[in-house]
Image (cartoon, rainbow, N blue to C red; front, side):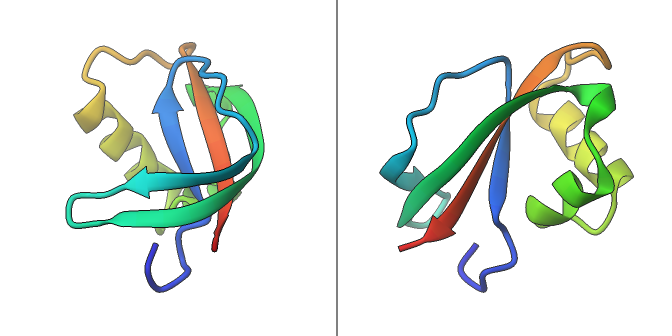
Length: 87
C-alpha cells in the first residue's frame, strides 16, 4: 500500500463500507485513504485485475491468501472489493 501498488482490499461477505475518507489499519500503521468504490463478487468471479489491484501477482495467489485468512470460504461465497486511493 505504501508504494501505491495496492489499490483495493477484499473482505469476506457483503460489507457496506461507505465511500469517502477513512483509515485502513495495517500491521504496522494506520493509512489515510479515500474509498472510491465498493462492489461485491463471488470468489470464483474475481479476476486477474482484482488480484493485481490487491497487490498480488496472480489470481491463484489471491485465492490462496483469501483461503489462508478465511479457511472456510467457498468458491460461491461473496466478497466485498473496496477500491481506494491514498490521501
